[in-house]
Length: 245
Length: 173
Image 1 (tube, rainbow over the protein chains, first blue to last red):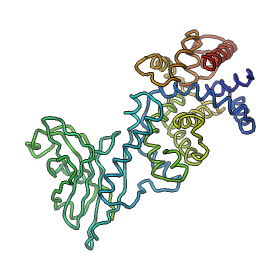
Image 2 (image 1 turned 90 degrees about the vertical axis):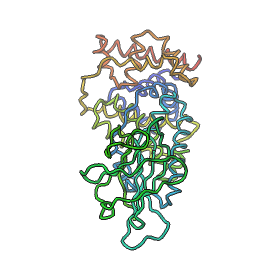
Image 3 (image 1 turned 180 degrees about the vertical axis):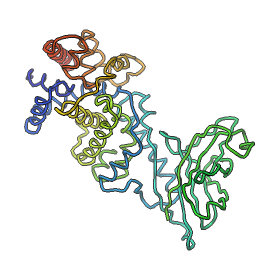
Image 4 (image 1 turned 60 degrees about the horizontal axis):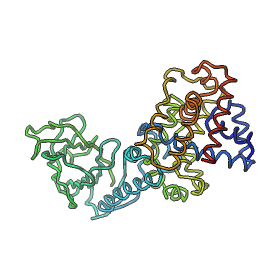
């Protein structure tokens, strides 16, 4: 063992080498395999400390910046059907869980590792659209959690289809879906059913006349839905519509 | 698996990797640079490097997360050791809570964590704090000297002795 090298590598890894020494040692790593090995050993030994530093969610805009610099538009996605999209989202959720299980980290971090807003842009293949028809998809979730619902709106058929992915209905309550257009008051779309079958809801007339800033939100309501026609409970999920065709 | 798919240029895998790890890495970076805008900058550089270098990741070298954290920490420390960086000294106190978490048996699971905990606990408390504050919070020798009211030379000695003890303990148990 080369003690001097171990010391240098250790200080490099914990970060206390002053600027110039740090740069010099970093340059040495490019040519010195022993130094690289020593650094890698320290990194492995001390890694559990980094794993215990509290998490902090970066702003949602950061992914767009990164994505645009690796040659893909931020909302880039594959062309899939609605059903495939649901499967893909479930799959994505499972893979992320698997990643964290392999990452040998505490269970608290597993939950936190699921943080992050999913935004997908889907093109829906079936059936061929009527002229001038537009389709929209919203992935409805709560910030930092996996998607709860997928909402598909098709102005061609005048239908809105809602598929529950992971939405959890609190016992003794109902979840109600609201459509919010621009600054107007939320309009109830109906009470959400869970299950594998997509739920079909009629599309508001205002929506068909042209979707501007459209938002879907889900609130917790008394069983059967809001008694007042406006949301009365907390909003647990929300998502904006993305035009796909 | 996500890293391997990222190495093949699969954008969706890269996205999944980001979703799974960005909060962890942002936490690590933010704790070191102590400035959100700078931390965002560092995180962006980190993932760009991951995208470019995912093919050189070797599973034999350790867990993917260790590799990602290493890139993020290196970028963050490079920034705070650069000559033009003036660190905000506010909020630089009381950071040994990480070791408190480390010492909490409820949080331990992997063998490596247990070993590191054991070895750190064999250091004197000030020496242990120096190592943890340097590694987790990016403290320089000068900042440690200020915190513990010691000459910089003493801190250097403390760090060297601590690393030597840690090395012996971690290698030989």
